[in-house]
Length: 318
Image (spheres, rainbow, N blue to C red):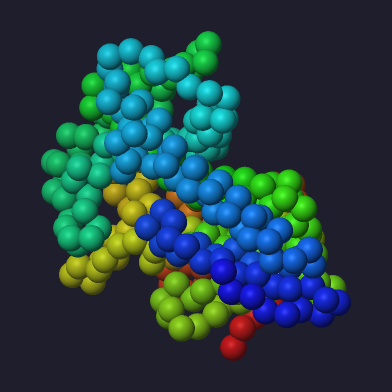
């Protein structure tokens, strides 16, 4: 944990650790001494890792893996936290007309973005019957996937949920000012110590070294981005990425990235994903209708689209 002296006798503490296939960063200010800060940092990291272990489909002991193993066989008992996440994923499915689907995990059998492999149309079509949120049954504290071979994937809601939970954990530990960055998605807690707004840069999806704009947020907020550059490859001039339209089984088209500012990281992440999958027109309509939300959308052609109030909290970068 790195330490840096801050104004007003407070100290800035920084903790970095691997999470969900990338790097997580937690930075907070405290004036109660290193022992209390170390305790708060340990609690925050433990909470993030708890959520990853519980919901990663890549971990055999996770609740998601257990649900997937029982697909087509019967219900699995789940707790309130898991039910909340699944319900939220199903709400996103309804909001996008099925373009987002929490059972899209079955398609990983043919989409391999690390190997840069494009599946055939027949391979994708063969798996689409397993991508069906209507076959997810939640009742009496249990969940069941109705067809053998279905796979639940909560990656579309889990990372931002973890950021919010870490913010809550820090608050429980007495930390009043923090910024949490989980693989580019941000949650702020309280206000910056110097009174200025938090500033979050939005990357140009076609130039990793360039910041397309900077958003300013006060007090507590979430900032999340969904982009076609996060995990994907280019073959024969076509960009293939992990944000799959569940109605077709193929990458969504029209947008390169969507960044949303919302009251929580969870809200920001869900809306960013939904808008990306809906595309420029329907996506912008969705965001304009959301309460307490501002957003920037960058099209595949590089055009910047924004909600009506974004200009009040954003600066265009050079």
